[in-house]
Image (cartoon, rainbow, N blue to C red; front, side):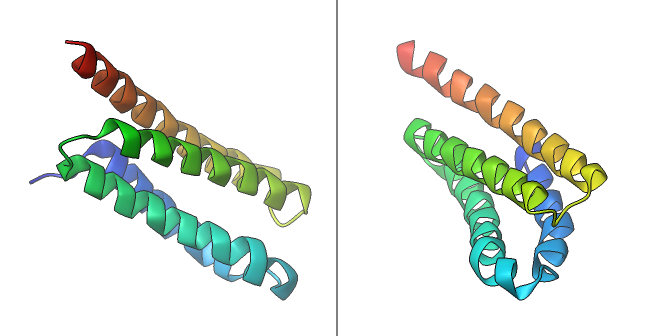
Length: 115
């Protein structure tokens, strides 16, 4: 079974982001960095589980909130000057692409529930 594009994009985000987060200075790595890494893995796991779930909507809405948390954490890294603007924009672009796909999936599930 082929991966959904959102799962592949999340996988690619993890592959890009985790090495960066692992190189954060100690004062950020063990607080914010570790939380972000765990959040990324939770997001991937949740998307894979949602793919197979009968009732997807509640799980997808929770994942949408987790993605919003990741978006804010990324902004914090930028505000703490742990990111240059180029990386911040790239991370934001990837997160927004995932968010757009997730929003479409949520919309599809809501319409399915009304039918």
